[in-house]
Length: 162
Image 1 (cartoon, one colour):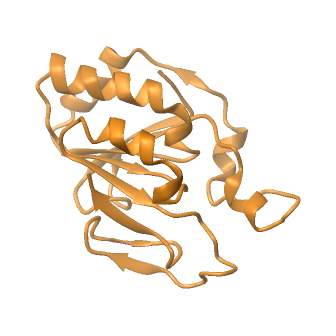
Image 2: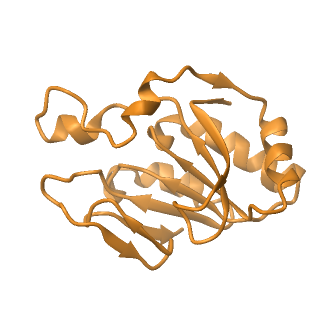
Image 3: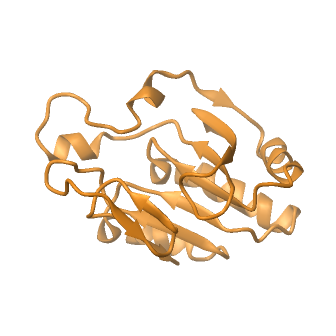
């Protein structure tokens, strides 16, 4: 799997301690939709980081070796633009390691834009998807999300268990 970063312990993006995996690509839909010429990405620092290649089995073992983390969050840049890699990783974690811990995917897509991708993810167990673009212009307030147990950056975002 190719990623931008791995944070072994994250306490911000989900209600329980999680490993945070940042994916390497994004179409820039958030700022392009707003008609801006430059990035409005809240994860812009990730764009500048070098890609990291890590074996899925090594990533699974790294996650399972940490007794503090009880979930995985896959987030920015845009996880659903790396869907095949994510599905492979989840399959290995679920089938080879029998791990059914929650996996949270933070996408900037709207739910109706990715119905086919969500259908594929729904075949896995214990998946949560956070939908909605980062849009501080039209949705300037943060919002508490009951599913994730955290505040989301803009109030057009929400999470669902799929």
